[in-house]
Image (tube, rainbow, N blue to C red):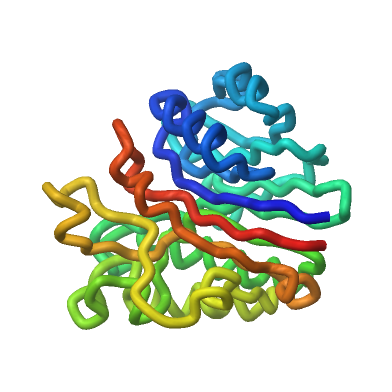
Amino acid sequence: MSFTLATWNINSVRLREPIVLKLLAEEGPDVLCLQETKSPVDKIPLEQFAALGYHHIVARGQKGYNGVAILSKLPLLDAGDQDFATLGHARHVAAKLENGVTIHNFYVPAGGDEPDREKNVKFGQKLDYLTEMRDWFHANKPEKSILVGDLNIAPREDDVWSHKKLLKIVSHTPIEVEHLAQAQDAGSWVDITRQDIPEGLLYSWWSYRARDWDAADKGRRLDHVWATPDISNAGHGSRILRDARGWEKPSDHVPVFASFDL
């Protein structure tokens, strides 16, 4: 079984329904994992997605904030969710394909602007969330699994436009990178994007604050595709759809793709 998967922080699935439909029609991934849907599940506009062949959905939502959804052409079974750091947020959902592969879709907290948990509650919540992810993967060693999502951390020096300038900026601070690495190691997760594209600057997010995001190109790779070692060699074809940042009423994130032959 071969399938292509995409992950995308859509920043409101209802507001940006037109560009979700554009992606589905033009790129046709078998599975699309969305984060920050900002919608209760029953308000997600499913009819238009179904018209393009996406008849299956597993999702968790809440009004106006957070939210994760897995849209699929392939049959899915709901595989549950976890409320790491007991935030009461819709930030994780899992689904299982008929071939036995479990897909975890994550939206890790952004962490606010100040990288100091004493001054900024949101930063502490982010670190706690990652710590509980780590502990959960230690206790529930994943197998035949793919993890995707907006993890809100750009871990490598070449995942940001300036390693030196962003060392004290939330999403690239050493403590966040270390916490993400511990969660990754706990599940023995393989970074599929960097397995396929091992060298060079690579971004999936550009701030709305930049007047001309393309020319400035001050990006960060916040969106990730990981897989467990038992299936990581089946991953290939990774790419980031940079052009989507320039679509009408865009998200500040763009889709990240990978294919798997299993």
